[in-house]
Length: 236
Image 1 (cartoon, rainbow, N blue to C red):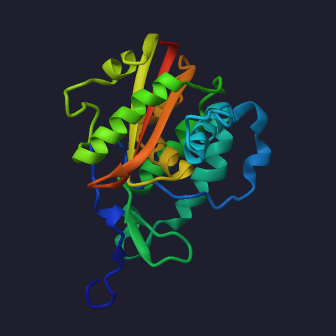
Image 2 (cartoon, helix red, strand yellow; image 1 turned 90 degrees about the vertical axis):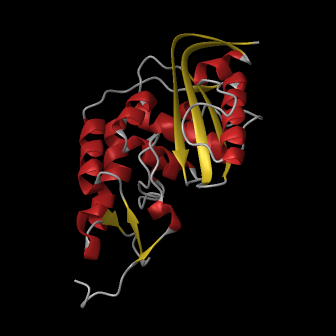
C-alpha cells in the first residue's frame, strides 16, 4: 500500500476523538432543496427566537426534521453518504465528493449503516420548542468548556447539566444533554450526533418537548455545540 499510494491528507477534525460524541460524521447533505419534503412551517419552531443565532435556529429545525420523519431523513441525508467510503483507508474513512481530504469516522461505514437502519425503524416524534433558559444553560457550558478546553458534561466549576438548567428555571419529567465538537453548521452537528447511538437516542427521545442550543468556539476542537433537552421546563 505504501508503495502505490500517496498518503491522503487527514483534516485536523479527522484526528479528533472525544468520548461524548461520535465525532466526524458527514457534512452537509448532498440532497439540496429537500426541505420541500417537510412541513418547515411546523418544524421551524425557533425561527423567531431572538436569543439564538441563525445557525442555532437551524440546529433546532434540523433536529425537528429528524424527529418528524426519521426514515425520510435517513434516506435523504444519511444513506447517500455510504458511497463516500473507501479508498486507501477502506471503510474507516470517508471523502466528500470533490475533496482530497479523508476523514476518520468513528465506527466506520458500519456505524452509518446502523444509523440509517435505526432511523428507518423510528416513528414520528413531536417537534422540540426552543427555551431561553435552556439556551442560556447551554451557552454557559459552551463558553466555559470552550475557553477551558473541556470535553464532557461537567463544567470547570463541577456543575452538572441539571444544575446549569436550574440556574434559569426548573425542569421535570426528563432531561438530557448532547455535545458536538469540531463543527459549527447545523447538519454537520446533528448528523455527527446521530451516528452515536446514545446521542441519537437522546435527540429523538419521544418524551422531550423543549430544547436549548449554543454553538461556540473551543480551544482544542475549533467548535462545539451544546444541546439541552427536557420534557417540561419552567423559565424563571
